[in-house]
Image (tube, rainbow, N blue to C red; front, side, top):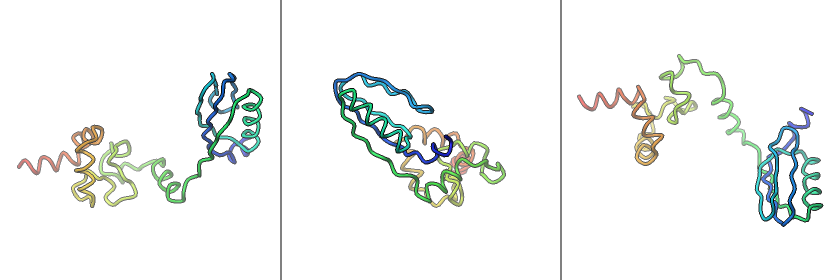
Length: 151
């Protein structure tokens, strides 16, 4: 079963029609169609997708689905980098791994860092996004920059 689940594909399911039905595939969220329109996402194997198609048709509804592509090699690399255990000695501060300014594949890995090659991104994002603005204000790296500018 584990091997089969690994071959599953993320599918967006769109069910339309007056029929009402529910089902749940092990390891997936429950699917409840109360009539009209229901949209959901599930990881499905080819066999599971065929079973869903049959169930939808039996209940007098229509199924429109899209299989979403997998990750590109770069996305896989970046995900692995972001989810790996960080050695705190390798990052500017202990808060970096949870900070929106943290970019581990950049040098330096913090866009709030005054040595960052992306001051325009820092200015742009902190200008309209509250989360980025708050993180920049709380950042010990950017705080040093703010203190230096005040002096």
